[in-house]
Image (cartoon, rainbow, N blue to C red; front, side, top):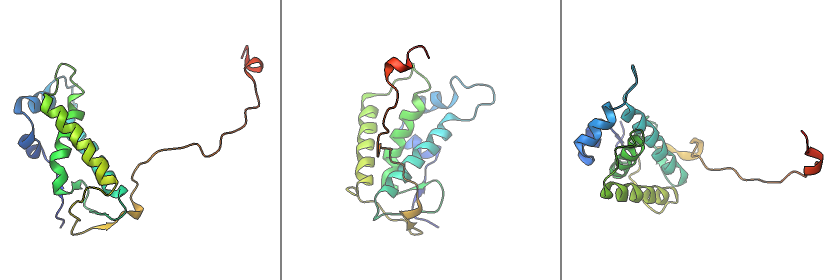
Length: 153
């Protein structure tokens, strides 16, 4: 059992306007399409867990889908932003945009070990957790062909 939380629709209802949540969950669905908010929850939870894992002093809960309790509110605003994108006519309120921006700042701080989180009671080291990152060019290859040689190809 972990002291981290799984985000549910009920959590979103604590932070989001009910008409927005209802519209996001039901509007413009294709036949047989699953609830798009559930997918947004999954995507944001993965992002949050990756940010937690970026800080080497953190541990992460092996319980799938859980995040630290102090990041739930921030994750909810990121979920709203992600899910809202599928309905262009639905715009976020100003405070929701501010909160989503604040959530991104907090997530950066978590990844840089500047925002301390509750460590999970069932935590495991983050060494084996893929935390994303980027790519960089280590060595550029020499170019053997010039533009004039490529002309006509």
